Image (cartoon, rainbow, N blue to C red):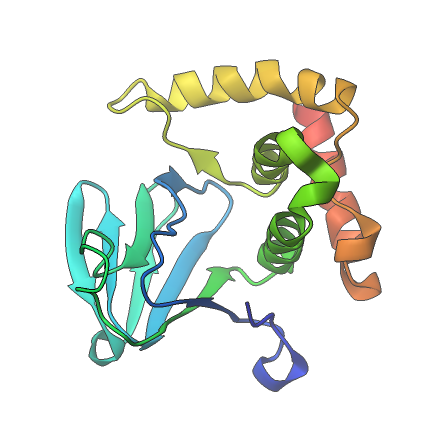
Length: 193
C-alpha cells in the first residue's frame, strides 16, 4: 500500500497486489463520493454494475459514480497456481471529492490487516466497522433489496461491534493531520443512529 502523500497532493492511494494473489475488495458501493481508479501497472478485472471487464494502463482513469456497485481484482484471479501473470498489479484510487476519508479508510483497514494478531477473530468485524464509518456499503444480498438488507445489517451490527470493544478508527493508524477527519466521520455516522 502506498498512501497519499504531498507528492500527489494527498489525493491518490496506490494498492499493490502481488502475483498469484486472490485478493479483491468485494462488491460494494459508496453514497458520499464518486471513485476514480487507474491501473498503473498490470491488468485488473473490474466490476461496474453487473459488467466485468479487464483493464490496464492504456484504459486511463475509470470513473465510478456514487451508488454503482463495483469490485476490482487481478485479471488472472481465476487462474490456476502457476498459470497467472508474473507482474504486480498497481491500482491507483481516489475519491471525489478528496476530503481525506479514503486515506483514513486505507490507513485503518490495511493497518488492521497487518496487525491481525492484535484483533484475532474480531479482525473481519473490525474491517466491517471501518467500512461502515467510511461510506463502504457491501453487497451482501444481490438485487434491488441489497440496499435495505445492507442498511439493516449495518444498523444491527454497529452496537454489537462497539460492545465487542472495537472502534471505527485508531490513533496509531491515523496520522495526526487526519484525526480531525476521522472524528468528523465518526460524528456524522453517530448522528445517523
